[in-house]
Length: 340
Image 1 (tube, rainbow, N blue to C red):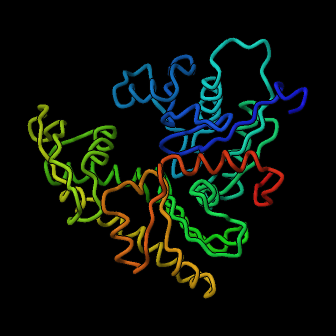
Image 2: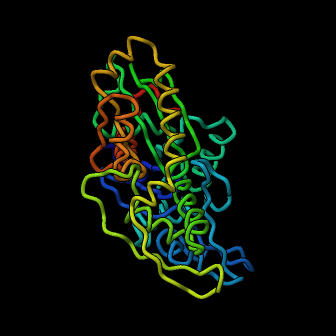
Image 3: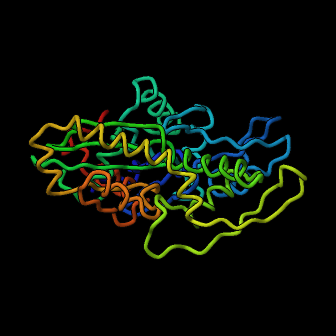
């Protein structure tokens, strides 16, 4: 430990479309929804994270809620900067005599363009980052799952987040081939909203659709331990009166079928691009799933049936990427794949 270590704060950020996690001192200190609430008149940020999420879909004309990230990349630069800054403040809410300089490792989707990469780096620097490193999400997920990424051994990682599904084959500390598609948790949520409107003539909000996905979301109609039917509340499109209906997991599996089929197609594409020696490794090790989307009931079984390969879900899949980013932060000098 150096004498001036208290002047520098080292943090790892998993900047997600749906949730942002910050790791400090090997612990997840911030786990908040990626959303800010802004006063339209003054442009001032009123709330960040959970408090802003409670306002989402319930605001009046003076307040708007913004999700700064779309499809895994920054869509609103100004809001993203305020969100990162607000979440960094949550690490140690007490008054400080001075602001420590920040050393950050941030994870980004593997299919990101140079311009989008620049936006992440600029947002982090504006929020107080002095040293900013970037790491690809599948690589962070692999490290977080506990795979030795520097071995000459092929591993396939699928990280299904909020905005993107990242599919990558990793060997020798690098991504050999990857496929990034913008179909993931958010797309599943909008599929549920659409299904409710079409099938049941009921209008529900994004937060309600998200709840339905968590409570009765499924990837296939035959699953072990099916959840009980779930009561959904929304507005009847015919009468305009609030009403309640019950939905089953089979209906939701039907609603999500097309989107999951696209994810399966991307997995098969990535397997086609894999060099034969690595394919042999993947046949032995199987496929690893991480990210919130991997918690969808029966998804591992469905991918396994499609690819004829064993599929393993990471323990605590929501935090696998954040954990890996935290490990990368401690080994900045050892991992050559971190982008400065």
